Length: 347
Length: 242
Image 1 (cartoon, rainbow over the protein chains, first blue to last red):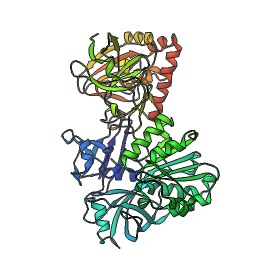
Image 2 (image 1 turned 90 degrees about the vertical axis):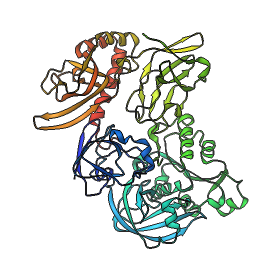
Image 3 (image 1 turned 120 degrees about the vertical axis):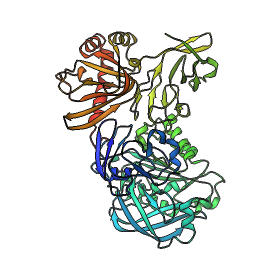
Image 4 (image 1 turned 60 degrees about the vertical axis):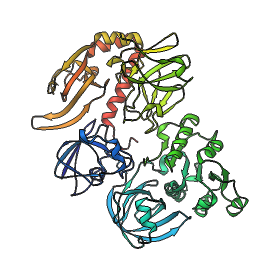
């Protein structure tokens, strides 16, 4: 099927396979169509049908509240073309960077499953073919019998990765996490599409980095830190990591964060912010390379980062209220420019 | 100029903002900056997001969704923003704030922030024209004497000739400028077809007269040329620009 996208600046044409979502077909062809969550929630990939027919795979997607179907609007991440179509996107669209990792449809199986806390689990997905992604990117993952896809950030970082590690938080009523925690997941086949996401880190960035993450939002930061440590980035640049959880019982990856810090003790600092309890005396004793503070993660970061914002690129992830609060601090108090605040909106 | 009551001074916090509704139902964002008040469109020009939910520090307004930013005094885009804000004239009388009518040129992407006198002289050069759906404004090879500012409606561009044409973008926002070859040297003819897709109102301005006017106010001319180069770059943007 031939897809034509009329953008504000020019038109693009690309091929889609039967059933392939228009967004993914465009990204696969190297056309940087607008999107953020890529999984039916944020509404950013809204387009208008000019000619032809599209089929909506998930009519109840939460992002549908942003579209006006009566005016031909639809979500490109949820709709596949039925025959040749022409659609309109009300934004400027460019070709992707030549160095960007190519999106592809992937297949894999659930490998090791490791509980991290009482409600957070890490899973490995073993791919049939290796994939390249950038640190900070995510995959859209589809589980058998669960409608729609979910976005999960890679924790690890490797070129030609054969295994992807994800962090899944158990959400009562959340289709994917309920499936994962049901015990049926071991060895199950998964469909993945990606990599997706623009909150990426490259060593050529040449800036100090600030990571502020709440809960499972730490996943993408782990990938960023893994790449930065592999490339010995912290021999030259500072790294400030703030990881917010409710209590020590909710904290995870503390040994991995300690290991990152052990390699670069002078320029990499890692602070765990506990919002719902005072810091227990045992915390610092058990994790001597980490700092522990009481408070919401954006407040702890605000207190400690004052005066250290020169040449900083910030990465944010976590529950939307935490990300919004961090954005507020970084724009209004730290006076970072908007292009140095990177996050992918999932709502 | 029609003048409409929009709110009381007391409703707007110092260096703060509030979404207000004027007589007749027009919703605008009213912001205070020191001793002055400004009124701009209430909804982000990017997506349907209320700007009153964004961030404002008394000078710079930020939409919280995608961090587009604007100078509240001029509506001029800053940082990531790809479009200016529509700005309305504001009058303060006896504790009340009134908003005036608004002209496409004053919200034009090339002209936000230039001197008031120069803007008025440019406005005097502008001829307002209305077109029905399907009209062709120009085609390749036509002389590029005038440029256009969209007031209302929708204009589409095609490049190529005869059967071998390809869509080259479209304009749908009030204040968008096209046909800007008229402001460039050595670009005497059109290279695209411009077609009106729905009933549209345009301001037509002669390029040579506009340039002459800007020569007499180089500070404003510099702003216009900076914005024009940013506009052209947006169409040329190469991969890797991020």
